[in-house]
Length: 148
Image 1: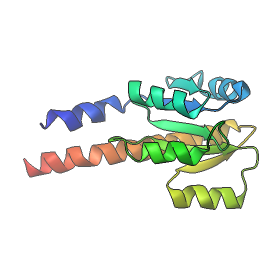
Image 2: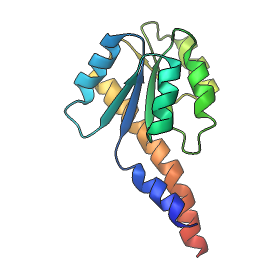
Image 3: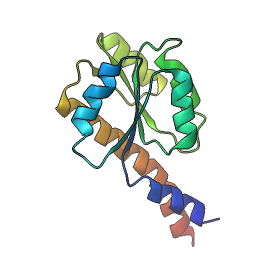
């Protein structure tokens, strides 16, 4: 039983990013930003495709376009909340204003990024989101070791 959290924690060492957007330019921009790193990027053009990727891969961070067709980023966030090792969700939008930022954070998203993407902002936000998820997964492992 103790091995399950440790295995899950070890799986978090690689930053895995899921880009969810109906716009191919979003995927291309993100790939250009993270393509020179060891990070692994998956892409989905809609909510159902994103769910399929989340079922098949251990995703650390999801970058999701505010407006999916059909649906919205909140639909994906609802699904993420039911996963045992939840990825951090970052909302992306050309209209990333204070209202969207407040809504996203209040609903449980990690951050909001404006488009077109700024390399520094993307790297900072994804690293912080990954670290947050990594720390949440590591915490139970540490608690189990302390109880031994």
